[in-house]
Image (cartoon, rainbow, N blue to C red; front, top):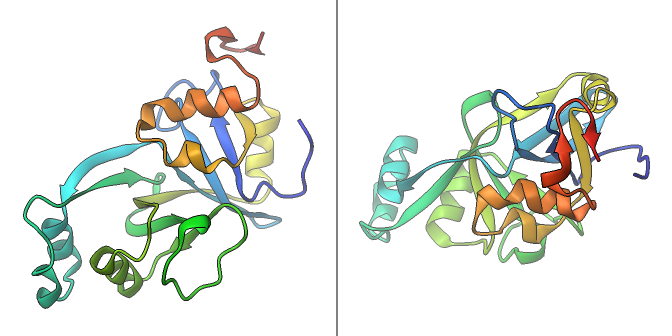
Length: 193
């Protein structure tokens, strides 16, 4: 693996040693990584599918906008991580933006966290590819680096096709395969064979 100064726009792929708790077989997209720590979002932990009308009521979105939503319209909600789990976020693919005012980075995903922008996206379908999440994963200074040194995470390059694969249960294996690790050969405590 090539050593990089920042893991921003990379995936953290849980190793076999991270076999219990929330991060078991999870893939985390690293949105920010610097000397102050790291911020990321799990991309393969769907919580449930929720009716958009219920989501709109939860956020007190404008009642007038709810008329555009069909009763059967649903959205899959993801858990982005264990921190701030009551806060909603949208991660969207920079390659597929339509009317977003922010200038996205060339590769990777961008973040929307204001309620007004989230409302606009859900109502107006301004994005082609996005994940709706609650919560995020955060690390303090040097915490993520220590976890990597302990062998808890593999590092994989960003691949949009992994994020938006329709089967989240396949993301972990896909991310490992992208760095030539066969998930079937992983042995706890030994990394990979």
